[in-house]
Every structure is written in C-alpha cells, then in structure tokens.
Length: 559
Image (cartoon, rainbow, N blue to C red):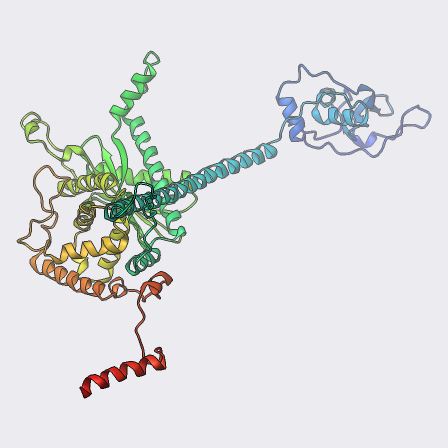
C-alpha cells in the first residue's frame, strides 16, 4: 500500500514549503475542480488487480485525469474527474488508470462495453466459503434424513409383506382343511350339478388375538425412538469406518504407482486392523420395545483385540462423530468389559455399546501346536467376554435366518420380553433361551398359527415341564458341542417359571388373557357376539310358552 506523507512539488527545492502554494490565476485556462479529496487507501478490488499483474491491462480514461499546477507551472498533483480522487505520483496515476475502480467508473459513465474482470474480495470469498459449507452440511443432513426414511420404508414394507404372507398362508391352510373335511356329494344323479366347495374365508380374530395385538401395539417403539436409534447407529458405523481408514493410513505405507487397483484394494483389506462392524442383540433381531435405550454393535478386528487398540478407537471416535452430526456424544471406554459405550445427549437419549472381538479368540485345537510360538500381547482383552460377543454374533445370524420369517414368532417374543420385564419370575429366563424356545414351538406346528394360538402353544410347552432338570432341555444350534441353552438357570427358577406358565394357561382357558398381558380387558367384537348363544331368561319367553311348560310339569307331578 502506498502512503503519501507530504505534498511537495516534484523537483522543487527543499526550502519550498506547502504554504507557498497559491490558487491558480484566473487568466489561465484551467478547469475549476471540486475540493480535493484526501488520498484514500486502495480498496480490496483495486489492490487485487495490482497484485494480480497489470501488464496485460491497458489504461483507459486519460482525458479525465487532469494535472493541477502551482504558480511556477509545476505539476503538484493529478485529479481524476471520474473517480473524484487525487494523487501526486505519476506511478500512482498509471496504476489508477489500470485499476478496477477506475475501469468500473469508466464503464459506468463513459463506455458500457468495456470488459472489466470482477474478482471477489476477501469478504465475498469468506461469504462464499461459508455458504458452500452450509450447503455441504445441508446435503449431509438431507442424505441422513433420506437414509432414515428409506430404513423406515423398508421396515414397513417388510412388516406388510410378512402380514400378507401370513394371510395367504392362512387362506391356503384353511382352504385345504375345508376341502379335506367337505363330504362327497351323496345321492347325486349324472345330470345334477355338484355344489361348489366352500370359499376360502379368513377366520375372524379370536379374543386372544385381539388382546395380543393390542398389547403389541402398546409395547412397539414409537417413531421418534426408531429414528433416534437409526440416527445414532448410522453415525457410529460411519465414524468407525473413518477410524479404520485412519488406522490403515498409519500402518500401511503409500502404494506405488505401478500397482494395480485390484491389488491395492486387496492389500488394503488385508492390512486393515478393524475388519467390520455388525449389529447384534435386539437391534439385529428386530425385538426393540418401547423404552429400550441400549443397542449393541460388534467390532471385528484382524488381530486379537487389546486394551491399547480399544483406547485408540475410543480416543478417535469423538473427532469422527463431529463430522456427521452437530449432536454431542459422550464416549467412554471400558477395558474390563472389552467394549466402548457411546451416549447421546439429545432426547431421547440413546446408548450404543461397541464390543471388540476377533475370530482368533476362539482357538482351534488343531492349530494350537502350529502357532505355539505366537505369544499373545500382554494387554489382551478378556477372552471370556470376546467369546460371548462371538456367540451373540452367531445368535443374530441364526435368528435372522430362522425366526424372522416365521409367522407370529417376533410378535410373541416381544410380548414375552415385556412379560419378563414386568414379572420378576420370568425375568430369570435367558433371552437367547426364550427366543430359541419360541422358534422351536411355533416351527413345529402343522400350520401357521395366529398370535393367540402361538401364545397358548408356548405356554403349553412350558407347562409340560420342558424347563425342569429331567426334561430334554434346549440344544443350542449355534455351538459345535452339545450345549444346553438353559444351563444358567437354577432349579428354583425352573420350577417357578413352570408354575407361572401353568397359571397363565388356566387364565387363557377362562378368557382372562388380559391378566397375563397386564392390560385392561377389551370389549367383545361383533363377530364373537353374534356367534355366542344368548341365555334364555324368563322375561324373554312368551306368556303362553311359559304357562305350557308349567302345565306339563304339573301334570307330571300329579301323575
């Protein structure tokens, strides 16, 4: 930036002072100019042109820059009539004639067709950057919202498909039953038409079905809870992907330019320390209830997980979570439990538990001697916890393959989970054993079961004593060795649950299922009211009919 400190004439001796200057004489043909403005600092636009190289720009508007002289005829300054500014340096004059400010004024007042390159100032550039940043954040939020809506649409479509599949199976089943039971036409002649079979009409819902579905609607999570679960889980999964990428960059050097793309990807996947993240528990099985705030994820590692790795992941997660959302998350590391817990501070407050494990924690007896020289790291996580997390992963895969497509299975498990939370006696049943028992009971039926029939069948199975020690037990299908899923239950708990199931079965027999479900009794439906026979009262009978019956009784007694 050029600064002017004094107004001395060019080439004047040092003794000449600014006070010696006098106005221009009237005899001289000089244009009367307005009051001289002080030299202002260059604007950002003009400074940008000067910094950007003005060698290619031709000066314009020479005729509008006048020279101001003193009495001796010396040029003391230059004045631009277009820009209404003054300067006392010929170099400043040339730079002004090439500057954006002068060219814009020349274009505005003299030649509108003059091309002037407009460059954004620092302020405009900052505004543009902030606008682009906001647009990027909006795009990320829109993408997250679209993902959540797509997830909800898939869930609704899945539930609708399951509902209509159940309806078709029921129609096919009852149609086969009617065709099997319908008697052949008797006493028919060759020319007589055969009456058609009964049409396949859906059986009306029983009182137990209506009560169970009403209870299920009250314990099913609301839309706000489902959105909160989907939001925090998607954020955590993306953050773990970024953590895996950062760990890969630290461990693996940059690939050479001669390597192929396929080899690079395979090498990256092989060198990754964090292999993937899987959903387990009630989240993967679709068994969420209203009020459930804790979901579980499994983080698989290429090597045996250590405390150092767990703390490294927990340290990097907050930084990565800030990229996807403006919400605040609290991250806590629990090395004793081999997991990381993430809390959301926004209502509804959700909690995600990330458990670290690796398939290498399950030792193969054939490979023990082969890899005997490989020593485990000193800060290895709990082997028992890691094996439990691997078992949870197997349970989730089995449930998705066997129980999710079974009619009424998920509904009954949700209702029984609510029963386990309300009644302390049922709370002693392991969740995996309960899911296994319901699947085996419903899948062993000859046809599709309605919710009321499935609930009654499960209670009948437990009432027969399948949980007692002398029973066959429940074989765990996810273990190589024979393992009883009920081995963690003691004798007293088995007997209490069996007695409770017997009592619940008696309540179902007396149409008091609402007491088992912990809800108010629903009014009778119109279909059941039409089918139920009305009791005969004295007031409903005619007078003659009542007198006739009495006469018959009197005749019999007199005889």
